[in-house]
Image (cartoon, rainbow over all chains, first blue to last red; front, side):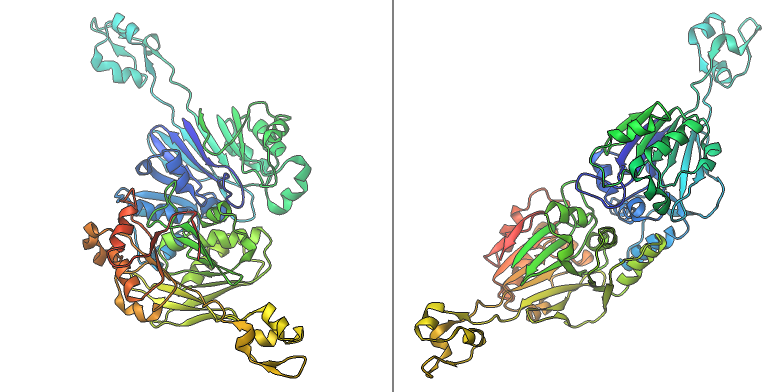
Length: 301
Length: 301
């Protein structure tokens, strides 16, 4: 699982500060999460192959999270894309994109499918054999969802040496990976646990931006391997949180601790700060394993 | 008159190639012309003061000319702008911008005034004591206007030495600049032409992007000091012009020659070219004084 931060700043794009966008690589999928203005440039800078993006998740319809979507959708067309693109986001996102395409008398020559969200409870929005993705209802000034990306448990790992020694035919290997006991060439039933090992534990990533401090999300993200939680402010500006419906780094740390996450990544810093080390320090008052998002930074998770 | 090229490339933004946007400084005004994605970043890079932009002109509603507008409008709000902003562009532009602001539950805290265009003939769309601005109907795949920016004739230039020698009181100087004959301290009427000189000839700038080769625009831009004319293709790709409704550099040169322009600036290059010197050469087959637009280049005109 690899997370590439394309942008991790709030409000207006600046020369060296991109608004929110991330690419999550999970089990062969490349998921784009949020898409502020200039995301297509950030994708190019980070050498992300456009054609691998088949699912885009938009948390909410503030500009710093979705004004780059229409340009990316148009660029896909100009690049001759033919494969489906699925866009998940708040109700209204389809109108916003299609109106602009219509005004330019352009439509996509690939299937563009919108999945509009308006639920108030966590909802499974994508699932295949490898991963599942659910919404995480957040509390912001407008309707906002975070997203929980979860790998499904993988197959058991074959201990090839032990399987050969136990005289098991190769034809049974896929059964072994599925957890079955199988007969060997002598007709003896070999117990699965003797020739396989547990698979790697499934990984998970919870994306929570933008949101006020909201402990009610904790059950939905409990035990997540990695939690990205917005940290717009430091404690000295905590009084701004309630009006703007944003969080401090310390509040993000508290959520990570309550959720018993494996790791916390902070981002969505307000433009008023020049240095972000204090964000880490304040979050670490509540939770130890804290990393800071940076534009262009890649986390191998 | 100063023209700053923020972006001069066509179709999709690339890491070092911005879509169309220009800032024209004319008689104290700062006019923004077109606004592709990332224009607000280009404005910052070129150190253009956001608050000086009061009028934005959008030629047409293709993404590479207007997808940056909504972000700029939002940023103006975040920066606490209070002064009016006037946006001139094709019918539909108001819906596109206001729908997106509405979806984000945000509105501007400054007056945002749209002037929607749907005329087929040149139309005066802005005028004050210093400048006038008219549309130039172009021929493209969607409804498109160029814009003709014209200085009004300035005041006559006072020859201070001559005026003092002719014993004219300072109180008459503004009358002299307006072209009047005035009495001197002896009561003698002094002929205006003895103590003033002609003002600089008014400057003008015609912006023509995007358009197929369209000689019918020539009367509207006749004698313009500076003509920016799109040059998407070189002659070897002239067969693409009719379908895409774009021009070659040679066609831009022909328009400049027919219009007896003072200077031609080329831009809106297709992404298929790595080098633009051939654009200049091909235009110069028809018109001598050719310059190439470059992102970040400033023309003092």
